[in-house]
Length: 179
Image (cartoon, rainbow, N blue to C red; front, top):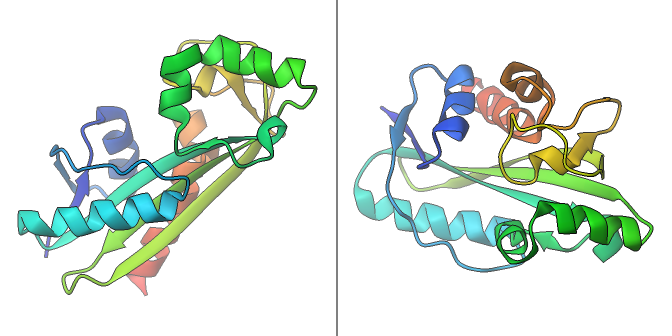
């Protein structure tokens, strides 16, 4: 039975493939509902994936939560915040509000061959800083994980993958599949 990761993002695929060398990429567009709940987004992606007739799927959603916005936003809507105001202004907002804490969260959804869904979460705390580095995409240059001196934007890919929230979630999935 083949395992497919549905993503068009080559960087995300490479990270997942480092845990599952046998995984195959499906670069198909799945509808992505706009929702505050990342788990609901993942559920809808998995339901849509079943229409493509393959056997086992994983999909993921990475959310970014600012403490200065009650720890609830932007969440899965981070892409739209980035498009609307940019990462430098997101950092400035956190600074002006006097609370630069943040949480990055990845949820991986896995649907087995019978369509049963399982969810695996990886969470990483950090602080928001002025954009630094260009080795990561999206909000990576403004996120400095707790206990580290570099932002994701400054870290080499391997360094980020070793501590990142996606790697944590993938590790949980891998453990589940080995059981």
